[in-house]
Image (spheres, chains in turn blue, brown):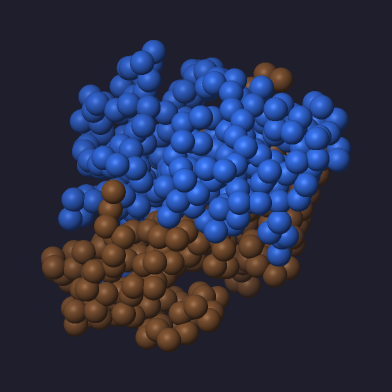
Amino acid sequence: MMDMENKTGNIAVVGMGPGRESMMTDEALQALDSADVIVGYTVYLDLLGERFAGKEFLSTPMKQETERCRLAFEEAAKGKSVAMVCSGDAGIYGMASLMFEMKEELGADGTGIRVIPGITAASSGAAALGAPLNHDFCVISLSDLLTPWELIEKRLRAAAAGDFAIAIYNPSSKKRHDYLQKACDILLETAEPERACGYVRSIGRDGEEYHTCTLRELRDAEVDMFTTVFVGNSQSRIIDGRLVTPRGYKL
Amino acid sequence: MMDMENKTGNIAVVGMGPGRESMMTDEALQALDSADVIVGYTVYLDLLGERFAGKEFLSTPMKQETERCRLAFEEAAKGKSVAMVCSGDAGIYGMASLMFEMKEELGADGTGIRVIPGITAASSGAAALGAPLNHDFCVISLSDLLTPWELIEKRLRAAAAGDFAIAIYNPSSKKRHDYLQKACDILLETAEPERACGYVRSIGRDGEEYHTCTLRELRDAEVDMFTTVFVGNSQSRIIDGRLVTPRGYKL
């Protein structure tokens, strides 16, 4: 078992889940409680609310992730215990990998990094929608800020070829309004148009809503950056209004 | 926001994470607290320990999953609020999909099903190992109890073709002692032997241990049914003894 304490001079990279305290683990809450300083994107910090109101918070604007990680190491070097918060899971499109890379870059040998997992949108969105990921699945982000679009296309094709259920993160943004459409067109090269799909908006937050649809309908669904999309595998079905991917048990 | 109460006659399918209370969400704990009866595989029930000592527990042996789900509906039909516990996440190789199928099978229209996510081994194992799933990834189970081995092979090939990081569940059992070897051989058809990999045993429990290795070494690693295996993508590296898959940020 790991030590629960967030030691001085060390950094905990903490997954806070969808954004409400009741969906964080006690381990994550304890890591924040015991931190001298909490570093994170302001929107996530705001979600944490009253419990951590007395804490020292440090932030950088969106898209300044490397600066944010550097800041965490600077604070740790002062002997503070630092918590770096990420939405969802710290190690799924979160800051965990960048923190290890930054440690190497800075030669910060004395700074320990501990990753504390959280509920990622694949899990929380799936739960809201039913059980779309209840067999082998892929998680793919459509954001091409850090990944060439060609690689994203390749992965979508591979996911369809393997008949995986798929969770799609970052399906859309202002600049990428047609990316989900492009992704569905790629999946439709091999998957049937009637493939069972769904999407969840504002998971675990006020206004959470989920929708089921076919792959053809998904192509034209209105999604935003707060939406997580789920594509079933060839065995998935809509049962009682929920998206369900069977595990294979005989009834 | 969803109602936190586990209402009478309804069923909550609850992901309990790796097995210790501090890695469960408060939402999951509340669902168990408010249940009249908790149904689950005995090993998971034992892990829950003292907190739920006064509760009515019902169980069936391993491999009797459909009977266990049927039992949950029988209890709900008596007007009880039921919690069905699963290790990890309820919707990732858990009981969530079977519960929806059983509801349809039984015509149990009056019984509501609510899925409460938990930390799955992909998340908790990744956190222990470093950040192996910090880019697009696949989750594949090597258990062929419910899935034809040919389909598992197809998915392994697709995962390698898409250059996904991979989390492998159920890499071995007494009857399937060479399955990880077979899986590695398939991945080695396209992935380089030096590909960065790792595995974690007894995640979040006493005796937790993690190892990093190459894909060639992974082929001969000693794994058991309590081990989760991680295969990096082509960009993954071992940094400071941890398995790290970069997100793509420039340092």
